[in-house]
Image (cartoon, rainbow, N blue to C red; front, side, top):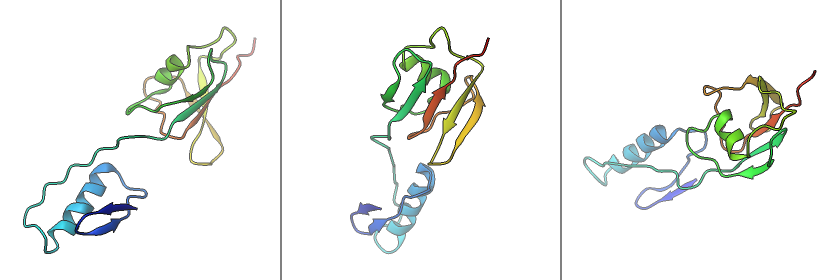
Length: 120
C-alpha cells in the first residue's frame, strides 16, 4: 500500500508502474483535479542473489533491465568450473527453473540465480 495525499492508501501489489500511475490518476480525477499528470518512479528494488560457480557469490543490488549475464558480471564472472550454458532461477518462492544464459534471460528483484557446475 502506498499512502497518497488527497486519495489515501492505494494498493500497488502486482501492478506495473504504468498500471499504478493509471490508478492514481483515476483516483485524483475523482473530484480533486480535472487533468492530473502522474509520474511514478521506483527508488529502491529488492536485491537479487547469485550463488554457485561465480567468483563472488552473494547479495547484490538490482538494476532495472538486468540480465543473467549482467548478474554474473556483477558477481565477478564465471569460475573455471561453471556451466556457461544454463542457469537456475528461483523466483517468488517457487522452485528453480532452468533457463539459458544470454542477454534475453531477465533477472528480477528478489531472484536467486544459481550457476551450476559443468560436467566433463
